Image (cartoon, rainbow, N blue to C red; front, side, top):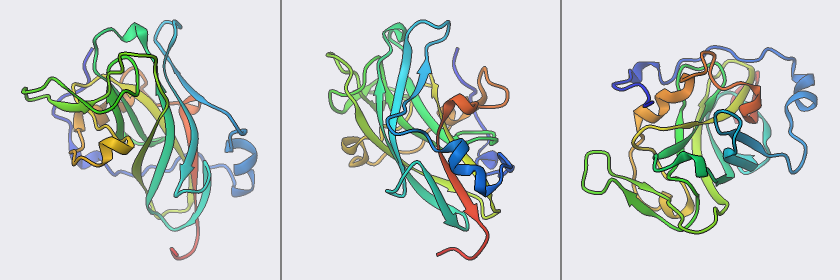
Amino acid sequence: MRGPQGTDKSHLFTWPMTDKMSHSDVRRTTDPAPGTEMVEPYGGGKGIRFRIRDVRIDGRAGVVRVRGGGSHEVTFDLLHDCSECGNAVNQVIVGLAGQERAQASVWNGKQRSGGGVRVVNAGTHVEALAEDNPGPAEWVNVSCELVVPDEPGVYSVRARYAQAYQGRLMTVEGRAIPQPEYEDALGWWKVDRPEGPGPESAIGTIVVEAGAAG
């Protein structure tokens, strides 16, 4: 099944508040233990789609406190290793819990990550950069920008898969090549998940504290 087509960009940055836990509870409840990986299973409980580890927000840690909202860089290591995915073009998308859409696509490819930049569907209207490693899957580092609102609160950063026709490849090699964002991939945020990705999909936390940015 393909994701929604012709999605409305006006919903891209709507800001419902997320988890209302107190700031004193943040580290105890949201900071993953060292070495923890987020795993996206393949539907039906057979195998995995991808793993995420070593999440850093603004080059720091997976849980950060900031003064005011704005744009923040999220980087992490990704291993996409989905033999059950067949010949599908897959994406990994990232956003904030409670929003209608993802904010960024960070990986685009077929079964296995690594192997360098390729092009899928070359010469068609759905041409895009991708990885399609012919060998064993390799960990790759990806990066994106997420925007959090100014309203103080605890914002959970989450990730999930998509299977639109196109997505960005935000590896080190991919980032060197200009790419548009693909709205159809971002529209997969709530496909089969009416509330969006759940706590099991959390990869980090941004705590916006009261006070001027800086």
